[in-house]
Length: 102
Length: 102
DNA sequence: TGAATATATGCTCATATATTCATTTGTTGT
DNA sequence: ACAACAAATGAATATATGAGCATATATTCA
Image (tube, rainbow over all chains, first blue to last red):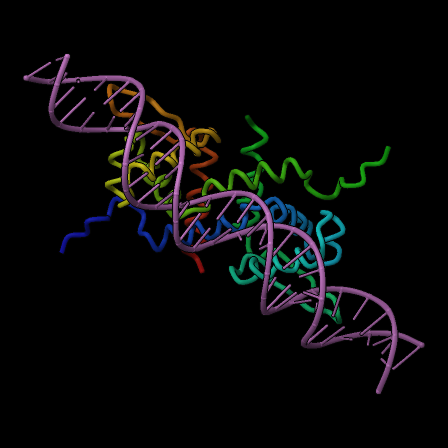
């Protein structure tokens, strides 16, 4: 059986890659993720830092958590978020470089 | 005058980064861009390769062109598209790596 | 236990987006 | 000039998405 679509990225793979980039395709989420480049930050601090409501930040973080882009650590009543892996760190800095050099 | 927002990425910058990632946030566009990793490809060939109508591909390419993510070269009645710079190449492969290792 | 605080969630509205279809523009070969 | 072809475009539509509000769920401290 011939693999007719072999030259192109498999649809499922493409969808997952798109999903990843989609997580970084919103200004608020980009700012949230850049906040997390500093290290662990809690919801309220992120909200204050970027000037977005805690509710909105929380909503965004849920999506990012579901994609395992960020991880959460609860300490008392505050929840500290962090970037989950280095790929995301690289993507963020590469993205920033891209728009800076042009 | 104190720069109150200095710890966070400037809103305008964040928006531009988001815009870049947004360009790669759709499965069809991801497949289009991966097609272009091979080098120059024309609209019809991309459409055939990924199984999306030429119209849809053309619409996507317009957006990618506007963001200077791809460039177009017209030869007779066919238009060859290509990735515009190496940042995008890196982002694509990094994105793929990310979803492959998890 | 009760009040205060930090975060999460469900819902709704407005807007953005991807795709399709029909039409158009530009180009080649006869 | 005309038919065939490649790509671009506009309008219409269905779906997705972000933000806000109200409310819920912890958790701490008095």
